[in-house]
Length: 341
Image (cartoon, rainbow, N blue to C red):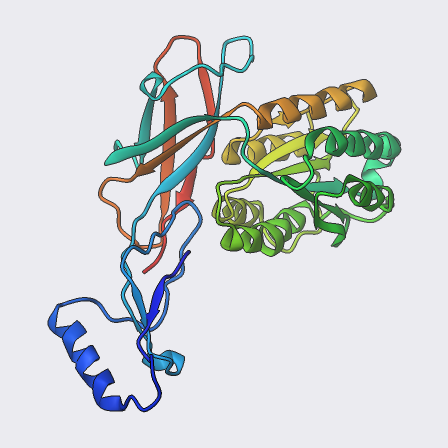
């Protein structure tokens, strides 16, 4: 959120009488007075187009004039029936629904392949993934080396077993990220949901609140999906991912060739956020999964719109994007939480 202000305390010697007349003038015009900025949930942008008047007084006496503009931004992927990305579509090739209603207006539609990336690499270090652990670390390092652009993209590395720990914070320095990956060691239980919740809450939410430009945010989870020690639920982890506008990509470490409970967990996490789950049977397929994620991150569309019948009530609003052309499939996050005012 950007705030503009005009300081009316121009010279020494100005007395409180002037503050009284200014406040009276503002009230007389019917403009709203507030002392706090309301919480704004991910999925909406707030634009302040009216000035903020700062009287150099304590915060409880600052007069603020604000105007809300609720604009939803959604990144999505379009593929053909063979799973190949289709990159030459226009706004008219899609139908958009927000809370089961067409948007009030579409403000922007872009074929967006060059947005900055913010990535979180979440690596399951529990004992159950030990068989391919070294190879997966190598593949993850190669992915970061190919994907990140200096001074433009950034990533962090988090290992998790019974507890999660960040081995390298956000940086564009691939050497430091590689050290963070290589410092991970296997052993312990699995708290997958806790790791996703913490990554979104502690890293992406803070980054999102301080960002002044559109950004693609994604988590790449390397795990078997068999959570057995989390304190938060899958639903809570997904809610935090949706609030932080994070796409979840999952690469399974299960090499049994069977469809296990953890596979469904990984698929659910990916589907709900507009991501994708990979189930590589052979070790070489792990590198192919990373390559597919790399390509997908550069092949997204972005649509910005104003919802119809919008209320700042904090509730969940569904998103549905449908391709109007035959044999096209769309992947996008399922919804967002409206701001609460």
